Length: 248
Image (cartoon, rainbow, N blue to C red; front, top):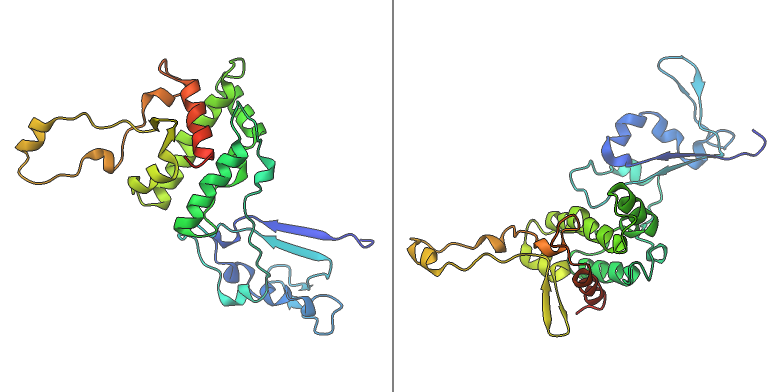
């Protein structure tokens, strides 16, 4: 062993019921009950029938997603044996010039708005928008040889990760989603990621009740920012991202 420390990382530790998974080992995790400590505890392992204690040089790190309320909450027995540290997004790992867009400022703006509405702990992680991940996405979609590949990757992340996550956060309240990341003003132009329902006043007049139009519920994405389509508009999407990062 020679003074070597061991780190055990348990990802998403709250996906199970930790107190039941650890069982009697839970008590042994406490620093003062480890091997060689004044209050050292030992237990008999149920299968090997051997005495076991936790060495002092073992560190246990458990990660958990506090946003996902469907996961099992940690009970008090676990909480008093662990120190809890909030780990937020590291926007310094995101590029300030990727395809002509300050992606760091874009991520900061989105997370600032999310914190205002939902509080800390709901922010987008930096991994969504790291250059290496966006480059890998461009390569997987065979865009890497195209001059606008960075913008296509950004658009893809918006369509498949960021907007759907906002829809979950806000329970399909599309007015809030539009406000956070769906519409901007670039100079005098209003740029929206969503297409509007075609006006049909004659049809609306025939309805016997007052109906809410679909665009306020789950609107369609506009075609102009579909990176695989012939209607893809790279310049417009760049202007959208720049305006969003600036809070326009």
